[in-house]
Image (cartoon, rainbow, N blue to C red; front, side, top):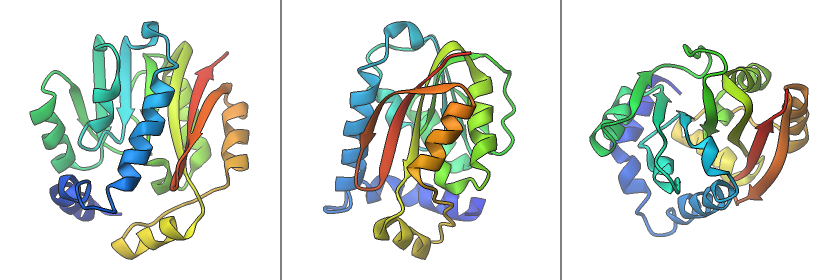
Length: 196
């Protein structure tokens, strides 16, 4: 999806989350994410990176305030929303395909609701693993292959869906161990720990 559509979506994103019926899915995903976050030791909330930060809603779920938070998003409009809500966050307008960040510099990386837009899943996982300290934690979501996700293409989204088995194989190849997972209608969320 091009920047124009992401910037357009940024204008209606807060409204979409409030529409009765449609708000069930974001609520379900936030609950699942909250359950995973509760399993993370406070020591990992030091340097946090949110890839595809969007409007910054997931950062509010942390039990403690991280020392350093960095958010990356493709949409400048989304980053402006985050900047108003959370001015202390360091923001980067960029692409998940070209991460302009130093290796081994984050104790926790979030990648929620964005991997389905990336064709090269292996490079994305490799990049996330390289950004993590050892040990480091990541929360990563994979959109399910189901009718509801395929309907998202009618909104202009170009999705690259893959099987959980394929995604889990990539985690293993890049030394990311699955510590826990949550399943919602639209996605599977994984709590991962870097081991090498």
